[in-house]
Amino acid sequence: MAVEFGLLSWTFAALGAAAAIAYGAHYLSRPRNWVRALVKTLFMTAFAGALIAAGAPAPLILAAVASAFGDFFLAFDKKWLLPFGILSFLVAQLLYVLIFGAVWFFSGDNAPLLPRYIAMGAVIVAAFGFLIWMAPKLGWMALGVVPYAIAITLMGVAAMWLPWTGWPAMVGALSFLVSDFVLAAELFRLPPDSPARRITAPVVWWTYAAAQILIIIGVLLLARHI
Picture 1 (cartoon, rainbow, N blue to C red):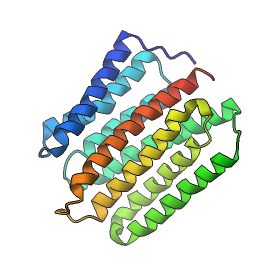
Picture 2: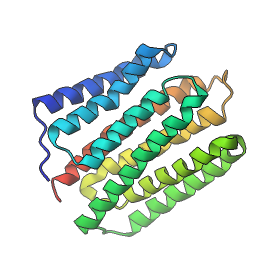
Picture 3: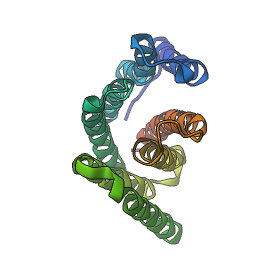
Picture 4: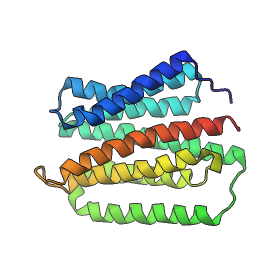
């Protein structure tokens, strides 16, 4: 599959990387406002533009767009926007599952098996255990959180079956799991005035930003071999 990064694509990618760094280094600790939200949203919006300009596979572009919407909805401290953010990222995760599954199917590369089984089992056990820990605090939000937890677990499992050429996507999938686990703890377990939030917020952002970039890199590397 021909995916070519030209000047326009690299410009968009550089803009997205700059937005991610600016948000994590400066805006993350600032009050929630429209400027902060726009900088956060620019991260994946710019990468979506880079993918469009490069002629990347449509599901990867749509996953980036869905993630941008999720970033926007979660940028505000509004509980009524939270379900929209979860739904947006649910779509992104399902698209990643589709991409990883398609790559595995068409590549025919599934060896060696034992490391994949071990990694897959670790992802499932970690996700299930975390969901049990979260359950008492979810309330009605379980209607959105549980399907999302299933989707991101499937994404993590599917990533473990990618050809080794796409190792950045494997690492990115695990980084996404870490980011969402910490975010869930922040949203549903930590008190608003908890000192731990000074640590959790940067962890959530940097692991999330790394996850998205690594997944994109991994999928594009794999696209060259399909």
